[in-house]
Image (cartoon, rainbow, N blue to C red):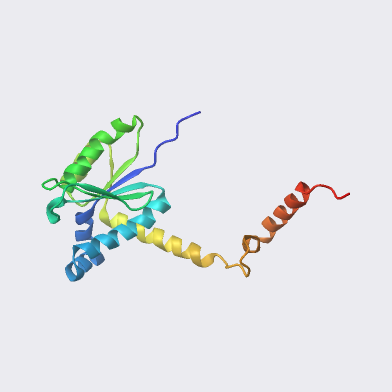
Length: 185
């Protein structure tokens, strides 16, 4: 049985993306870093789940006076704050350099940043680069896709799951139910 490939890993240079995405930059300037971080994390939570990617949003410790920490947001998304004095770039470079060796299998790694030096270093380790603009467009497309799927599903008239199924599936389930019933005596 062939081993399945691990999910792709998306590494996001958090403050870099906040500085590039105009709506996050406006939020940061108006409401502060915490508000812009929250918006970025919310956007990436939905995107990561839809893509079925493991996503790590990395924030520099330069804006926090604390030790490194990791916050698990969803099964697909975690937020990493670096140690004081460590940059997000250093963290991302380290993950790109050691990630494939730790798992023993080749994992697709994608880095999203506008930092040219980080782009080149990550690609030197075999990671792919996704521009912040491409990430934003992908996140927006995923959000539109999710909204369309939610709107297109008709709500059932009943509280029973059976009523929300299409006619073909209802018929198949009814046939299965009749096949499983013991004959009447």
